[in-house]
Image (cartoon, rainbow, N blue to C red):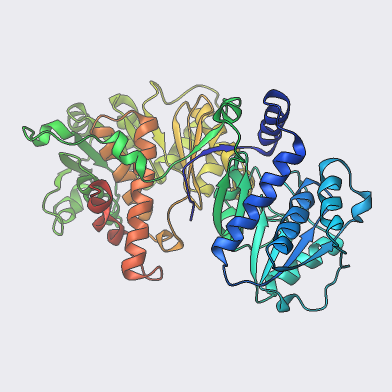
Length: 501
């Protein structure tokens, strides 16, 4: 859960934001640290108002300095607060030393690790390791992280959970599992993708009373997208409208035995506002596709000529769902590449594209009208690497794909990443594990196709569709639970998301 939409930054960018605030706006570093400590303390009091015993784990850098301020403020408020120092306070430097001295000036005496009974505290504050972490926590740090993860206490992470790589969201060994993370100056993108959401808990952002011009100083930031973007991208419909005003989408795919894929994509497109949807699929099962959704038009398409006729009249195309990788499948992909329409390419369409690209640097997709929707394994095939390498840097992988194929890329997974060829990226923090089910990707492709058919540019269409799909999935999970959620359950909630009251 995220409290507000924001731009997203790497750890190095946030360090530059700090310098901008200090050097460009004359805010002393210790004042920023005081504001950060107060932000953490106030967020913890609001989240856990009945807590009376705090344990603050302080590391050796500025993250630890924030922790000393939390402990001092807690004591001033009448809350018992112990500090476990992982570095002698006297050995600290700069603002962290000042923060520790202020805490000691009020009578603070640090404890040594390990503490006697971590379960005796109500809240533990993780101020151990900051955003500069680039290796697995070791020694006492790793022991402390493991201990608090197993203790029956609330955990508050200061800026980022210790052990989490702030740029990629990858857990580097032992990593704090927080109930609440309070992050400052700029939102760290790793909190919202890969392992980040499993470790950050609820995320509270605090700008530390710095002007917006501080965040404006970094122009290559990403964006965090949430439901409010839908209203801005999909204006109210005029009363004097007909189905032709809202676009004609072709959904092409589903080889033998996989007819459900185009059915799911087609219905999702209709529920996302497309005026009409025509499914092009194998003739042998074409008559079955729309039995449960008669609003879909269906054509059996076995030849390149039949496909060309279908694709010539539509506003947008979805290709790849259930496509397979046989001769007919290649014929379909070739026809979609030749059609020149805004196109969503998914599933086996991506696998065929990877084969076409292998060993060639010649651009295959032209015109800036493509949206690719890979999961990590498909992204790996397109990049010539493993799914693990993709997951190790989801934003970087999506950006590489977008540049290589000159397309908008939707890298599916926890914290779906959207990237454009010019380097822009967005992360969606919505969605839930129940959506990891067969057909969910087909539904997403249909939603994106509907956005394209209604006239949105690929970058906007991808954002609006990812948010709508994830939000519908969250509503479906609230209604049905995560286990056993069906892709068609997600489709059923799309109109609620796309027509907010």
